[in-house]
Length: 119
Length: 110
Picture (spheres, rainbow over the protein chains, first blue to last red):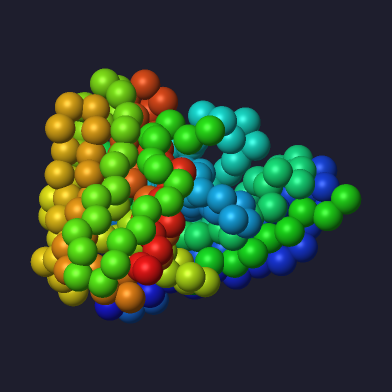
């Protein structure tokens, strides 16, 4: 079955750019939407955005000015860039496959990776 | 402040039935189906329900999902110790044009 694995630096300095990659294995990246979701320590979940394998995207309006999600189908990877980070961006970042009529449910999820923003 | 409102905590004893609510608005729950996730301690969320009441394979039928108007509910009957987890509701919001989550409910099995 499809499995996802996040990778990237666990520590990012404030004002710099957070960059993460999600690698898809056990299935095709094509014909699906792929999403990023984050969870600050001890808090709830926040949807960041999604990308279709063709490259079309949709972002959370509250993060839209700072977020870029891209896809590389040849590597079966999609990536997240979040610029001008602050301590509020410290969170566990999850990648997931987005399904449903409006890509509103997520299955499966990666194990998540903690990114800490340091000052 | 989450767009969807859930009680921060819920509890029950083994064998009991517990219900977790999720309150939204016309632009989200009333207009779209609801999804639920279970997050066991230290793990990634796992899909529990999609399209309000559809259970992925492997989810016990002790779990049920429903929706009425601008609210949704997750019910767990025959509560078991392994059900102790955080539960999150989520749906599409037509006004925000994105997915919104509830703040999560921590379920404790006493």
